[in-house]
Length: 257
Image 1 (tube, helix red, strand yellow):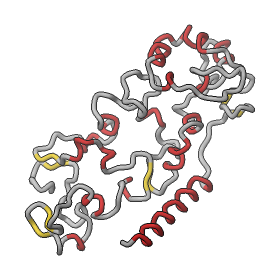
Image 2 (cartoon, rainbow, N blue to C red; image 1 turned 180 degrees about the vertical axis):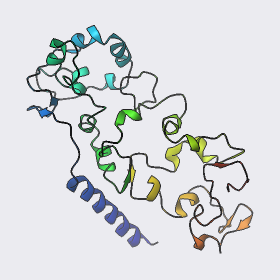
Image 3 (cartoon, rainbow, N blue to C red; image 1 turned 60 degrees about the vertical axis):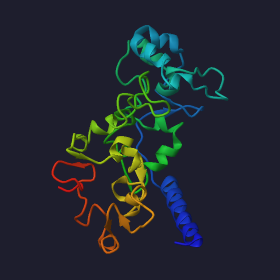
């Protein structure tokens, strides 16, 4: 594809991205919005993080060590504290009613709270293939730990293993396999855009272009020790019946079932 073709393709992707971001409505919890754009329970006012810490001691200690606690938001209106209430909304009603359910904003049930800062992720969730967060079938906190100190910087996912978050739902992809696909060691995001993609299965590239990001060599179309010149046009590497076990195989060293 020449430069003009690449430019046209990029323009199409940008147009699709903007269309999805601007035209598809999102699900919201039944909350009111105050003048500062923050979610709020009706009649609630800000009480400060110290009030929250009196009951939520464990969460408060974890939050102090988290990535979120080290983010300073500029131009916050006077009277709006930075801390727990930046995400959970004004907490006076919650505190006055001894922590009664429904008296504080729960980001697990309302992703709009996260989208106030992470607007780019909201747009990605509106792409054709995405995790069903906007549909209410899962939440940001299923993958991210907003309070946790033991998380990867700027992702708030687990430090234990780069793929651990994905394997909570996609356990069948974990293995161990007799013949593993080394790309899995690098992380699921090597092949998948985890919030949303224009490609099926949330892949970062379509067709054989995905595999060829890694599997290219000087004498291409030879891959490995075999000529793939007649094979590549038959379909994708994983759908043409060749390398069907793309995450790993227990039966064949060429990643087949």
